[in-house]
Image (cartoon, rainbow, N blue to C red):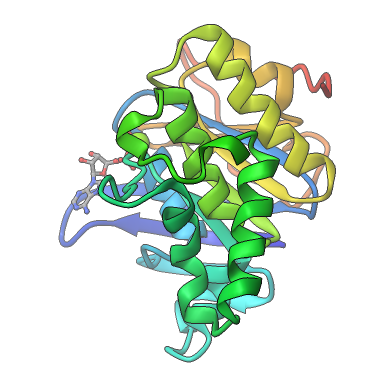
Length: 245
Ligand SMILES: Nc1ncnc2c1ncn2[C@@H]1O[C@H](COP(=O)(O)OP(=O)(O)O)[C@@H](O)[C@H]1O
Ligand SMILES: [Mg+2]
């Protein structure tokens, strides 16, 4: 489903942000990516989403080899991976449903079919009564749910989200996480970057921890494909509870 083999990533001539990372995530896993600011969490997610290319190594996502992805195959990858970036990039001058319709415009669906799909997506995140509301009039949690609706409207097999609960209070953060869990329960492979270890431990079944020059995988002891187990002074193994909610 998602496979990294000896992946390195640097920007321009800069240092390696990620160095020699290998792992395999199988369908239906719920992975959380931990690590301090600047460690490379967003970089890892962008590599999975095909928004950045690796400097070295091989990445396979849903059968696509990303380092040799043709321009023709790119839209298919985009549709199979739903991406929620740190900045949600919602269009504030459009209604909620128009934001969700946007990724469907390139698919050539008839407009009534597209609208029905967008409505279904809004319904899944609990926003069906807000379809005509512009994002500016939505709360932070509702805006995040709208970003999720837009990311899942193409029914992706993989959902990646970059710190989706960062600016939310506890209760709202939990509601957002339970939306992710609902999609994960029906088989969507989920990868979420977060600072909130305690919250993530309640939902994720596996943790990656990135620190400058280090990468640890909570599944490394169980799986021979996961490598680069690291240790060092002050280095803590990622802990996951894995209690499904
Ligand atoms: N487009 C870019 N060009 C140059 N450097 C970048 C770019 N994106 C991220 N970086 C650098 O890569 C490092 C990791 O960034 P990032 O992946 O955003 O970390 P995190 O999400 O863990 O905070 C940081 O030092 C950041 O400044
Ligand atoms: Mg980041």
